[in-house]
Length: 150
Image 1: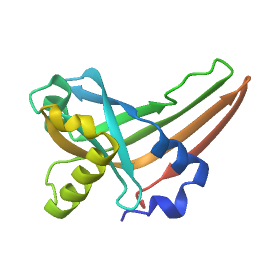
Image 2: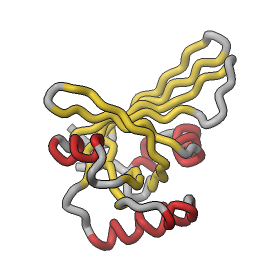
Image 3: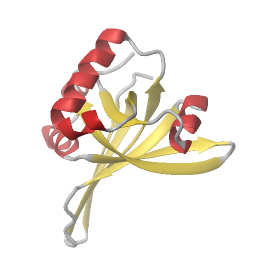
Image 4: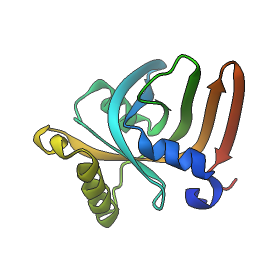
């Protein structure tokens, strides 16, 4: 059972995830890790991360073989005295619900209108755990959330 992120994530964490632009996607194929960076949009009501990538890329081939993925988002503008980021685990959604994919596609292109001109497909990840880290001048703060009931 999925738990609504808007009811469990703090407003600070939701605001952070929604305000950033790039996710580092982490996949594994034949025990070999691989990463890729993609523009993304997070839709908390649906609890999905939406990104665009070509099906034939190394990371998408790996994710299509093993839909369990991880990711990391750090702030777009780095400050040496304040490091903020999110680590997450989740699942690539491969049996796309057409209405959910339609909403995801529309929201993605609203945030990144230039991406219409770039080839590729829209993909979705459903996070099941999110860990927020904030390091201000050596003071580390962490918040962890499970988005799937165990």
